[in-house]
Image 1 (cartoon, rainbow, N blue to C red):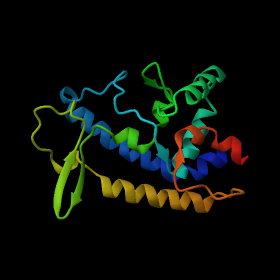
Image 2 (image 1 turned 135 degrees about the vertical axis):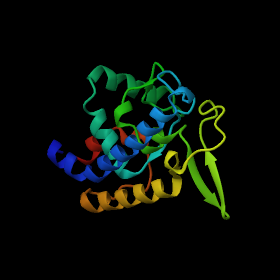
Image 3 (image 1 turned 90 degrees about the vertical axis):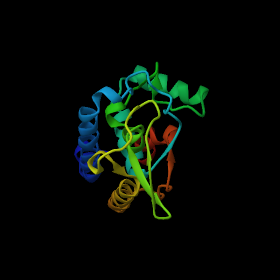
Length: 181
């Protein structure tokens, strides 16, 4: 698939990633002394499944990696079925292209259940912080609603021989563009 077509169908998703990254950047600046996540901190890096739009974006980025790195990832998929295949030497090889869950994990996210608000974040981060201002929180419901809408629009914008499943394992997502071309 041509790069200009990839860019066009992923525009909404890329815009969403930028907004999430801007928010995370704000949090990192405001709480720089309270965030311990850094390269090598990989306890939250797990095998996951992705929406079609995320799988498509990951696949496009994976195809740009050097062949040697693609081979390392492919070998990891074969050896470690339950690990994130993109985690090589405790670092994500597609960090700048990582999905929403990876971008937001560890940062303050709030959810509402039965009228009660819950705030979740990595227990290694924000030690000593007892509350957060509203502008420091991400709404899990808003994130999921937005991502679902972007995914639905994306799926309506592309043509494939067979419909994409609702969720795609990351190990299969990496090769998605090769399979649909």
